[in-house]
Image (cartoon, rainbow, N blue to C red; front, side, top):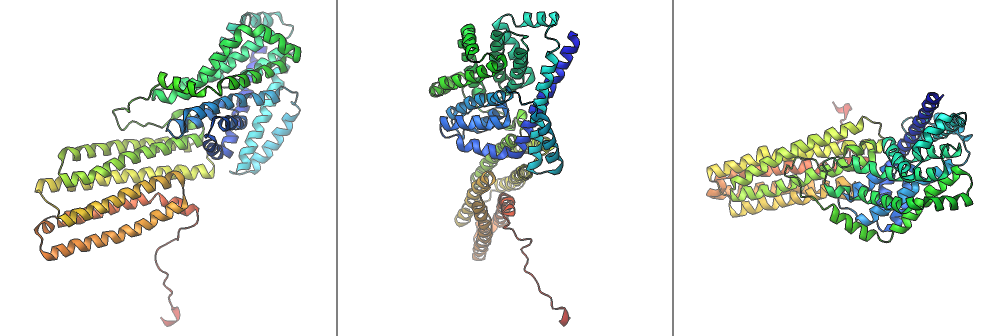
Length: 556
C-alpha cells in the first residue's frame, strides 16, 4: 500500500514538474526576447522593477528565469543592483499567483486546455501560436497532475503507516523547513513543492502548522538553487543578486518560524480550508517580505557590495567572462550572454587596433609581441562563443532568436579575422619596419594615423549597431565604408605624389605604407559587416552593386 502510494505520488509530481517546464518553455519561446526587453526598460526604479518582476514571473512560472534575465543586465553594469533586487521581490510574489489560481477546484479545465493546446501546437508550425499551444498543454498537465495527487492521497488517508511516516517528518517546524528547502532545491521549483504541500494539507496528512513550515522551506529552497548553480568560479560580484534574494528569504524565515502557531491560528480563522490557507500564507509571506525590503534596498545593496566585492579581472584574457552555461535553457538570456562575450572580444580587438599604430610609429618590439599574444586570446574567445551558441541552437529557437544567433557568430568571426590581420599582417609589417630601420615621411605618418583613427571610430559604431540593431546607424556605417574607400585612394595618390618628388623616406617605405593602408581597409570591411544583417532585415539591401546592362538582342 505504502509503496504504491509513494509511486503514484512521485508520478504525479513528475507530471507537475513537466507541466511547469512546458508552460515556461512555451512562454520563453513565444515572448522571451520581448520579456527581456521589457525587463530592461523597467529597470529604472524599484517600484516599476517590482511590478515588472511580478508580471514576467507570472508568465514564465520561474523566478529563476527572471533572475537570469535580470542578472544579465546587472553583471554587465547596465543597471544598478537596487532595481534588480526589486525585480526579484516582484518575482517572488509572481510565483505565488499560479499557486493561488490552482488552489481553487478548476481541474475540469485540464482536458479543455490539453485539447486546445494540442490543436494549436499541431497547427502552429514554428510560429508563436505553436509555442502558446505548448504552454496550454503544460497548464493542462499541471491541473491533471493535481487531480492525480488528490486521487492518490485520498485512499491512503486512513493508512496508519503513511500517517506515521509523514508525522515523523513533519513533527517539528524547523525540520519541515529544511525538508521542503531540500525538496525545492532538488525539484528546481517552489511551485511544485507548495502545490504538493497543499495536496497533503487538503487530505489532512499534515497539520496546518507543518504546512506553513513547509511553505517557508519551499521559499528558502527556491533561493538556494540560483546561488549554487551560478557560483562556478565566477566573479563574486555576479552572485550579489541571488545572494540578496536568499538573504530576503532567510530573514523572512527567521522572523516567521517562531511565530507559526499564532499565525496559523489567525489564518485558520480567516480561511478554514487547509489547502487555501496554505496558498494564502505563501502569498502573504512574499508580499510581506516585499513590503519590508522594498524601501531599504539601497542599504541591502551596499551590504552585498561589501560582502561580494568586484574581483580583479582574471590574468588569462582568453577566459570567457559572460558565457553562463546555466542560461542555455533560456535562449533570450543565453543570447545576451553570447552578445556580451562578443563585445568582450571586440574590446580586446579595439585595444590591439589602437596599439597597432603605436607599434608602427615607435618601433616597439615588446608591444608587437604583446599584440600578437592578444590575438591568441581573441582566437580562443571566438571558439568559445561559437561553441556556446552552437549548444544553444540545438534547442528550437524562434525566427528572431535564430537570426540573432547567426549574427553573433558572424560578428565574432569577423572580429577574429580583424585580430588575424593585425597579428599576421600589420605586426609583420611593424617587424619589417624595425628590422630595416624604415621611417615614414611626416605627411605619410599623418595620413596613416588619420586613416587608422577613422577605422577606430567606425569600430565603435559597429559595436553600437551589433547591440542595438539600429537601421540608421547601420546605414551610417555603410556610408563610412564608401568614405574610407575614397580616403584610401586619396592617401595612395598623395604617397605617389611624394614618390614623384623623390623623397628618400617615401621611396624606402613605399610598399610598407601602401600595405598598411590595404590592411586597414580590410579591417574596416570586416567591421562594417555588422551593418548587413540589420539592413537586410529592414529590406534596405540590393542584391548586387553591378549596374544592370540592358542587352538589345535584336541588334546582335
